[in-house]
Length: 261
Image (cartoon, rainbow, N blue to C red; front, top):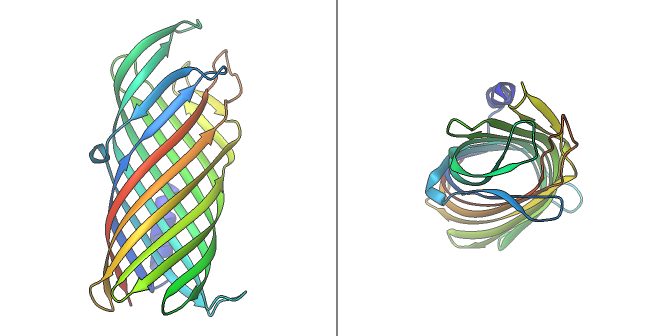
């Protein structure tokens, strides 16, 4: 985890950005686990105020584009969120398959660095482009109380997407969509001295709608809405335990400042 933060700092020191963005984020989590027969097992839910975070990114123009585009760019971003969710579900008794109803508060931390290459055709009325990215997702769940324990989900993922931005004077509104597929997703559970699970087929997608207002040629304000979905199939069985299938339907609102040089 620390190495990805160091990578961000290193890259930031090696190149001057053309565009830098820093935004405060507010995440509403909706995570549900289901059994092999599809019945409810547990959930993690929060409202927007309970998981604040930070989104930092910067982009460097790398060329005049290809394949019909007129700009190529490399973007590096880092999202960090931390806060509480309401857990509603069950605990599995040690050494038995018995499930006990259980509610608590979970402390969450999500770290997601990403590198993106984009090809964009920029025009006076609108911009349209495609992009490919490599990202890494780390989610730490700390279930509270004396019966709680920690889980750590992590995986690399490539993504491909499409983005559009429409211009009207100082105002801009856009739409961005991407498909993501996890590579060798893992989950560590702090039970029985620690168990590592290989998660099943894991994929996701997101769409984001940014609204931008240009204060002047160097500074802009952005407000954005993002819907983020992940589907995780059940893991392998280790020592009689397994990680169930799950679906994540997170929503996020961000408010940020864009600086252009």
